Length: 185
Image (cartoon, rainbow, N blue to C red; front, side, top):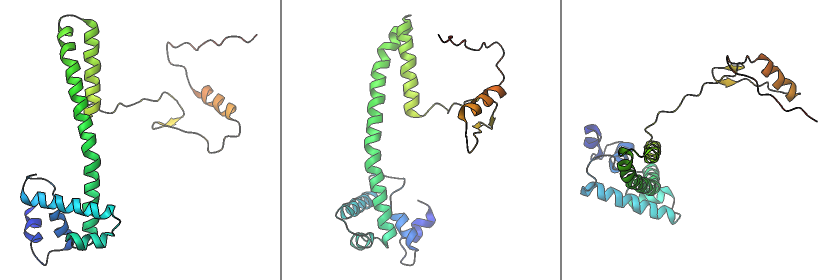
């Protein structure tokens, strides 16, 4: 929390949005009395919302300056509820991958090609779970594109004619042979 927000948050003349910002724990000591009190207040706000109370009523009962503060507290609590199970599943999957990787790695370093393949697949999965791989760029080979977008006429009266014109405009790639189609009986 910035020094400006912390110095203003205790002031009775502080704007409401700064007071509410200061009440929502962002970063810092997760076990400080102030953080715990803010979490308990947010949990109470969520419980009151589950009971059907309006944000104005929640703000009044929980001590928020206005309905926006109550809304933000409830929203933050809901995001935390959905984030925690997802983080737990991710941690469990990573632990499982670690357990699979260790014996496969030992076998792979001993020359086992199947184990090496398993290690690579485990590493790929770990990278996907952690978002380590950069998105792959796909190059379109269609000549009827403009910056990667296929241009399709707004109204196509004869789909087959349009497809034929697109194929006629396309030039075959060097070294590629067109597939031979079986002759009809």
